[in-house]
Amino acid sequence: MSFTTTIQPSGHTFSVETNESILEAALKQGITLPYSCRDGVCGVCKGKVLQGEVDYGKHQSSTLSAAEKAAGLALFCCAKPKSDLIIECREVSTLNDIPVKLLPTRVHKLEKLADDVMVIYLKLPASERLQFLAGQYIDILQKVGKPRSFSLANAPHDDEFLQLHVRNIAGGSFTHHVFTEMKERDILRIKGPLGTFFLREDSDKPIVFVASGTGFAPIKAIIEHALQIGIKRPMHFYWGARKLADLYMLDKAKEWEARGIKFTPVLSDALPEDNWKGRTGFVHAAVMEDYADLSGHQVYACGAPVVVEAAHREYTTQRKLPNEEFFSDAFTFMPKD
Image (cartoon, rainbow, N blue to C red; front, side):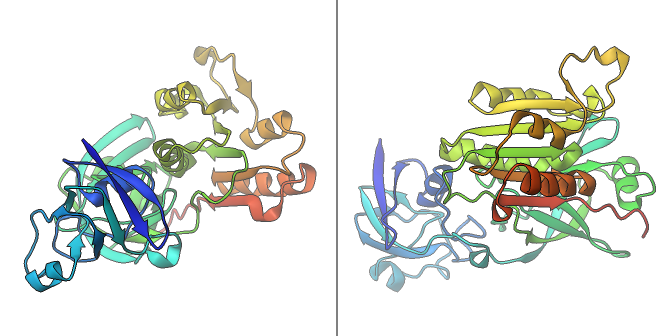
């Protein structure tokens, strides 16, 4: 059985199953309410029930008192509906709504998907969650040396683990550590979320995604978020790499293709054993070949700076893409300290 919840003052509505929390249901349907711990401890998700009845769920009495309940307040990470509801709370719609945090994380799993690509799954403490927009990144803080920035490859609705895609860069001390010394249960300190690379949901323009290498990571997060919330805009994903093995999550991209995301893989230096019959050359150039006019599109590009810079320059000057409709996250590699 499900109940309808209406948010004031926005007027947004969503359905909530009797066995799920209000927050859980909202996030699944692309409505982002404020939250942090998702465990009834921090109080960030506290809001008012204007109409209807809820089961308050398990929570700390110091976080939601009897007097607050009597005043109509509830913790939406714990509260479950017992009827249709009208609630009052703000919604997260801009970067300013999301706090940047310093948090410890534990390495839950290391998964090597290519010779030079490792996926790190990070687990936050039980009392914490990191609220973020799909496409943003975090900094890994080191005891010695500069922070290392990595895009989050998981979408906000799938936040049990933070997923990072790390390429082994020649001369990179941190990436060398990831591939040779890092192990499960290691503790890492992170800062985030950071960055302005995220899906602009207020547009109805078709989208072209351009990724090179592990620039796939934030594009993955954005596409999974778009699919989760049911965005119907046409989307075309281009993923460029040197050889076939570098398309390290090819099955995932093909899954999206089956759900309506057009997919074009592009190899610049395919090996004979790849038996590659697909597109070749530079990934940004493949877009140029397919689109004579990008004036009515949005482009989201991520990966090596040379790719992102070429895409921006050529799409805006040669394909009429409005400058304000180009969104990017160029990976800058720091091989020293």
